[in-house]
Length: 135
Image (cartoon, rainbow, N blue to C red; front, top):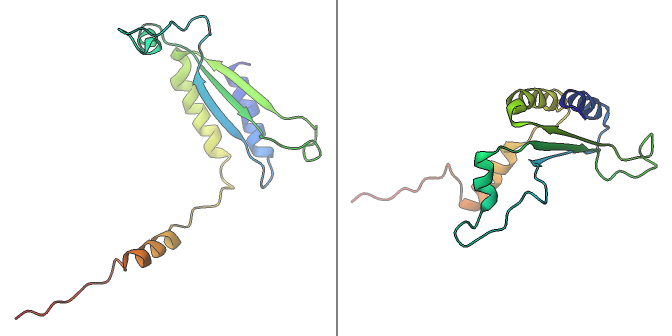
């Protein structure tokens, strides 16, 4: 699917999920099995040198996770994917970040105070000072 269509459907997927439902996002460089050269003693990582000369497209996937049929309305797992060429990557990531941030409003903020208090107790307290007698 085209990147614009992917972002539209991803926004729908993120906005329609219910509490406790997950959306998994992944990305990787797209390479064909026939294109990957063999590693040699002189060049142990040939895919790194090859990518420097010819940039590869990125494949980005989104899925609604391992939901059971009786939970989903349609009964099927939703899978989205798109291929983004290297020259379109910067603009795509800008829109991708906007879509993700706009739909992460229901996330519960992390409670940092409890973690710090526990760490202080284990270390003996960050606010405690020891007094020594001066002769």
